[in-house]
Amino acid sequence: MVYQQTSDWQFDVPTSGSKRLPPASRYVDSLAHQGYGFEAAIADLVDNSIDARAHNVVVSFLRDEDRLVSLLVIDDGQGMNDAGLDTAMTVGGRKDYSDSALGHFGAGLKAASLSHAAALTVISRTKRSPSAGRRWLTSQARADYSCDIVEPRYCQDLVDRYDGIINWHGTIVRWDQVRAFETITAGQADRYLNDAIEKLESHLGLYFHRFLSREDFHIDIVVEDVRTKEELDHRGVEPIDPFGYRVPGRAGYPRPYTAPVEGIGGVTLTAHIWPPKSPLVSFRGIGPLAERQGFYIYRHDRLVQAGGWNDTRSAESHLSLARIELDLPTAPNDVFSLTVKKDGVQVTPAFARGLEKATDDTGTSFATYVHDAEVTYREAARRRTEVQRKAVIPPGKGIDPKLKRILRDELPQLEGEDPITFRWGPLTSANVFFEVDHKERLVTLNKEFRQAFNGGRRSGSNDAPVVKSMLYLMLNEIFQKERVWANQTDKIALWNSILVTAVRSEIAR
Image (cartoon, rainbow, N blue to C red):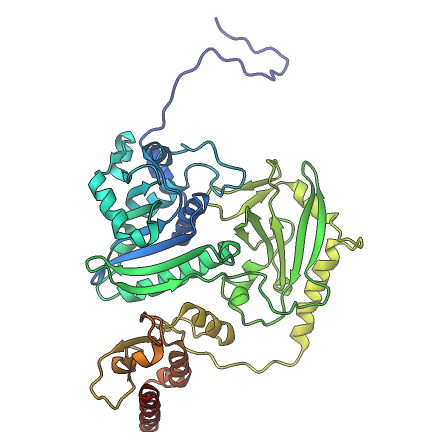
């Protein structure tokens, strides 16, 4: 029978049956090309850890001399049994997300991981089930979507390796054949790691700042020797609150507004005005200022959009102090839709219409807030230029992350410069407290004096923060010179003499 189109428009499309069309092998390639940045991919894995009620998450770069061989994300969440692993490794497998879950589409683990690695292994254990694992190889997935079952003995061995984190339950996500690692040329591993960890630290600190501000949740980034298990670097991720100013830029702020949005009702917006010329990392250290004005949108306390006006207005320099805090409604709606990568929110015109009608408790319009933010910026621009602190070479390995954060808050950083690294080691003379390698930007402290600074506590790569911060401030200008001149050599000798005498006096007490 041939279907005849009538002159009237058909509102229902007629069908004559159905057939099953499974995804072709190229679907795996499309899954792996979702455009995940490295930091966003790791953040997606941390989402899973939080959904599993983890309190501790460790991102570990595994290093074999000058090679990076694997990346692991380890957590102490509730873990998964065999059935749970099968669901986790199935694209779109999860359908039972809780109302507070950060997971959304059931594809994040696979898409984020395969965007950066050719092999994805997940190993997990629960309180009631033994260690088990699954592995996806891109080559096998392309062929028939087959997933390997990892040998149980290996699963238990890997869990035992990280028993300080996992203990009775938890999960390990392992990336192998990481594409970025394979592009590192000889001698460049340190530079790559420093850049990668700095970016990752900032990204996780910003997007999970509400979680990290709690006492019972921590993210650490470590570099581990794959053979000896020694920690070569260890950094605790600190929260970067995009509203973490000490004093607002204008009296009367922050101020709550309510926008009547069709299909939702009242949506609360908390409007902030940053103080002008703030040196804080939470203002200047999270990307170009032009991109950081506008809406900061949260979903279940997880930041999913850091700046942008969502087509309600254009970014302008005189609005760089304006940031608005918005928590997405918990109930499903057709106005706000989250991107797959959780790096932005799409809105319908209903939001813009609601924003035009938004008012605070006194009836003052949202347009007044925009005007106040602009005036604050323009008034600051007209004032006499403030005294600027001299830019410094950034701090590197060996300095506690909290100390690094305050150094960056208080001192402008020289862009593109290799950082200053601190380490303990044997020195050529017992009468020297530290030595400087000007070319390598390395300060080596005499390990014979290390005990004086740890008070019986276990030593770590980031110990002795007081003496390291003093040396960092004292030596920064010298490291900025092209060479060390005689008067600077004399300064270093003077400082060594005083510090050796002081530390020996401390030890003798």
